[in-house]
Length: 128
Image (cartoon, rainbow, N blue to C red; front, side, top):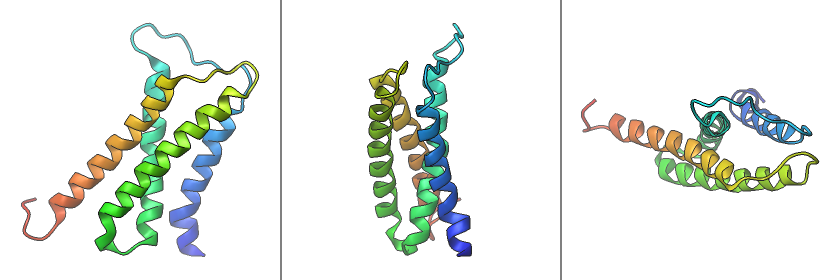
């Protein structure tokens, strides 16, 4: 039970939060002209989600399955991002945007890539 609370529940609660925010009618980000604030939020939101998902999957598998955990995490994040945007498109006053999905996937993928390189660097025989 302690492992579930530490490793899996945070990912589940974060996923629920993403779906909850997607279900809010007529939600729109503030208009900031310096950058696409909405896309940055998507990117960061899924980078955090990627960390939690990776951590959850990593706890379910042996350490030597690191690459499998990374691939599984990316696959899960892609499917979840597509589902989330589809779900959001069914909410009154909300729209679906392929650029949101791309921002989600890029944020998640970049975080998984960083974790992969950190793992490779920490392997025995590699310089730190």
